Length: 451
Image (tube, rainbow, N blue to C red):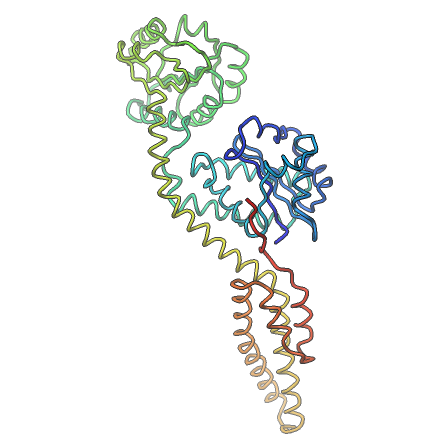
């Protein structure tokens, strides 16, 4: 486990343009992963890329220098040889530090928006790609099983799942609240328009496709609108046609890149008139664009409800402030998980030794009992001998239990060197196998974090 290392580049230390240089296109990742594992000389490898980070989780081979691996990673991803830039831009976490880092990342505690839940799914997809590439082995698989357990517990038990941080989800929640207060079961599902094809409108489309609404995707380029509409069961329309003759809308969510108002007084007037003709109230307007797509003055003059970026950001900020307070509780859960992991790793490392310890006690009990029975109690019946043998085996097991517990505690608290010292202190021939196993143990999770 001390050979597990994370090589990471994230939003805190590099601008987005720099992160892009480390990013492998999704369609190339499976093929590149297999090639990179060979080039880096690592036995297991996974690759995670999000808008805020790029991280490679590697299982290094014995004696392999992580600093040299870092230089190779830089060369493979950036395309040039530059040891100085590699050292400045790529951080290394090793051993227990690597495990802790993965716990924190997958739990959303290292994200720009504390507590975000999407990162755990992104980590899971990175594992699936590694599996497909053939670079996911038993060690990384076991580690990520622990990572996902911790991430789930942190999100559930710390309260970080409560409230929205994503502006798109806050916008969708506003639509849901209006649906809950206005929609009748026997009515036709209301129409919600998404203006512009962006990351935020895509996320809104994904969430709203699960609601009882009809979706209309509007974009300056009809082809892009049709592409998103086909993914969420919506209807597509070009922006010019929409502005000229808008249908009656229940809500409108807009996030375009236009430098000017898309919905001024004239355009909003047509929207309101269309709703009135259909005997509907004016639509709920949600503007996620910077600069704004909707004229706030025009919306106020027409009496139309408008939620702009200031309100969306304030809702996100309130959730973020609450989550900062919850972050301490989440951090405690991570620390507890690390303690539990140390015990698990110690148990895995000690399993052969503990098994041999029980066997040694058992063999010693059998040997001494045979000597006593043959010399001092030769006239016992078979039944009596069997009863004594069962008693001796039970006693041996109970006597071995205490040192077994002690060895596990020593390994978890002080590392395997202490266990090795304990087991190699005696020259008794009967404990030679314990001596050999102790000398062959590999320390687990002892790496340091490099900042």
